[in-house]
Image 1 (cartoon, rainbow, N blue to C red):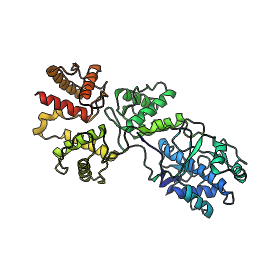
Image 2: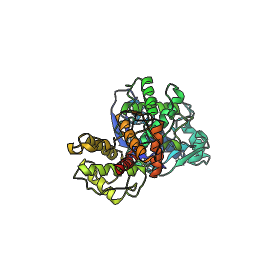
Image 3: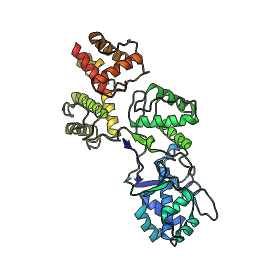
Image 4: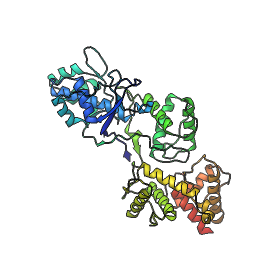
Amino acid sequence: MAVRTPVVPTEIVVHLGAPNAAAKNITVSFPEYIKNVASNEIYPSWPTDAIKANILAQISFALNRIYNEWYPAQGYNFDITSSPSYDQTFKEDSQFFENISEIVDDIFNNYIIKGSQIQPLFATYCDGINTKCDGLSQWGSVELAQAGLAPIEILKEYYGDNIDIVYNAPVAPNIPSYPGFPFRLGSAGNYVRQLKVQLNRISNNYPAIPKIEEETIFFTTDMEESVKAFQEIFDLPVTGEVDKPTWYEVKYLYNAVKKVADLAGEGISVEEVEFPYGDTLQEGESGPYIRALNYLLNFLSYFDSDIPMLNLAGEDFTEDTKEMVVAFQTDYDIEATGVVDKNTWNALVTAYNQTRETIPEEYLYYEDKLYPGIFLSKGMSGDDIENLQNFLYIICEKTHQIPGVKVNGTFDELTEESIKSIQRRYSLPENGVVGPSTWQKIISWVESLE
């Protein structure tokens, strides 16, 4: 499984003041930020191992803020403040000490983790003389270094024996977690699963939010009810749709109940950020997502002459798939990488739905057979479900090879059992959810009976 691990950002946005202060934001490189903090927080004359221990704490503190989107989740447009009352001391245009700069250049992409937590440790610290805290004592670290302790040994004295250091973490631009488009009933993907995990954890502290039974990648009716309850409790528009304000409110409450900004907090575990698929789809990969991608590309190529009709099949991302992706990206002014990231996937789904809505009149005969553009699952109702049930009824009546259904417009248990039967027949994931792949098999079976 893919695991979303923290990266060290190339840049960090610093608010020059307390969070609510009317102060400007500045963007600096992450190493420059750490050099600034370290040069204002510690002395260059300290033992090297004490300096390294303190810098690792400063790096981890800042990365914890960034990874958990502590301030963006509260509606702010910065990553961290310059105020030591809230974060770490940062002074614009500050001078850096040479030895501190050299150490930062060497270790800026190393950080502390604790136990099974995946996010950088919220490594609080204080001077240890004028102020006391539960974290690292800066002057105490000097004494420990003078006694011969290495940086990791110094850190364990303050943060516990179950900490470790991640070395040479990848460096990349900081990308906000909100994918740029809302999620609603019928959506699917890793982001949906992530939301389910977070909502279920929040519900431990807010029991009025109903639990979501299955932490799958599908946005189901029980998830919609959970989202509505969340929105009602926290004074958001009760739509059942996860837009940007709802996304970040979930993030903020999740951070709060997990106590991510707390040395003794639960933190984020590996299991919570394990995804069945990676953040991108690319050549050489295979799986149900690729089958869905191939379906969408085949459909779009039929109506868009700029996309070559290469008749993709199966669940493999082939050279032909890449060629069609590049053509689609070029056609829709997306960087033509041939890799399907969240922006390309969203554009594909949007283009598919728009094409369905504007289908030429001569193709209207086939309209009912076109995939509805959302993942259909138990509990959903409406015209799309009734249309699906009509096809299932035809298959059952003419072949008696799947369980019967009632054409009532509600995706009930009978409908789910029929879908699972078809998925078994065609060796598709037996999840009872109708995505592009399952829909295509149902339509092909119906057409073979006409």
